[in-house]
Every structure is written in structure tokens, then in C-alpha cells.
Image (spheres, rainbow, N blue to C red):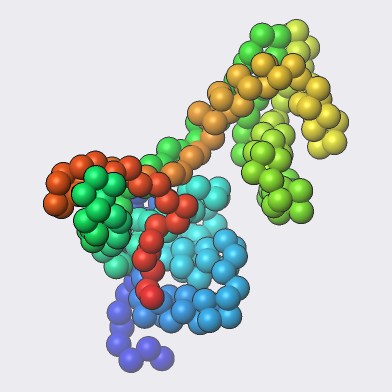
Length: 231
Ligand SMILES: [Zn+2]
């Protein structure tokens, strides 16, 4: 029996790729579980999701891709820990050591999915969400070893249907499609990939900050948000 009858309310929400997601802030339990997980140095995307995101969602069966999950993690962090994160940098002009707080909203750039057709010349590719099984291909040795290969595989597993000179095919297997995409003229693939990047979700972390001493601007890009969680 709980000591008190405190009901859980999911009083925050955000729109992710057109889906309304309701969530709550972290409690001591999530913080503790995260710190335990970090101790075991077992920080896979999957374990982070299960520890820090899924317990906070009203509907944790909602389908979210890697970027959508990352964005949601930022949203939960904003309400749980704060809307800013501390950074330290040296000004390129006056060499002043700057310590500043940056707003997550200004640094985290996210855009959701808008799946559909992309086309170039004789080719139309229908792009959609990869199946859970297909996503496992992103964990393969080849995909882990190379960003280029990973991007290529992501393109292949997101392709649902291909139309070439008016004739449609959606019965191919992975290997057939992989070889077909490899065989595309490189300018066609380049153009298709650019269009692909616009219909799939993206998340990047970058911001411009000004030196506190001389106001000189510095552009900062991060792979992960520094000091994002409990230290
Ligand atoms: Zn400066």
C-alpha cells in the first residue's frame, strides 16, 4: 500500500512529428535508476529509453524514432532539472574563459518526420518508418563502423516502395533493394538523399554565444549536451 494517495499526472505535453505526447517530470526513482545504470556503464540508447523516458510517458507504447526519443529526453530534462545547461569555452579573440548557461531551446534543433514520396528523374522512392526488425540493421558491425554506411542503410530500410519509369515495386527484399540503391547514378542518389534528410527526423545541437568580455561570437556544436543529467 502506498503511504499516501498521490496520483500520477502527466501534466506536460509536446507535439512530436504530429503526435501529441504527454509526460511527467523525473522523480527520485528515475534519477537513482539512471545513476545505477551509469555505474554499470551500460548506457545503450535502449536502456536510457527504458530508464529515463518510458516511465514518464502516459502512453509508453507510442512509436518514436531515435531523434524523437532524444528530443523527448530534452523536454523531460527541461521540466525536471532546468531549461539551461552550463558551458565553458575560451574566446577566440580575447582568450577570456567564459562560463555561461545556454538555453536548451536555443541549442537543440529538432524537426520531426513528414514521410512520403521523394523523387528524382525516373525514380520515385516512398519513404516511411522502418520496422523494428529493419532497425536492427543499424546495429550491425558495418553500420557501427561507418557513418556513411549507417546513413546508407537507414535510407534503404526506410524505403517502402520504388517506382522506376512508372513501374512500381514494393516486393523487394533488403538485399535486392540495397543493391538497387548502390546501383543508382551517384548524382541521383545524392539528390534523393538530400530529399530523404528533409522528410525524416533530425536533431542537432549547436548554438552561438557571445564572449562576456568582448562580445565576440563563438559557434559551438555538440555531439551530446554537456552536463545534461545528474553528475
Ligand atoms: Zn572575448
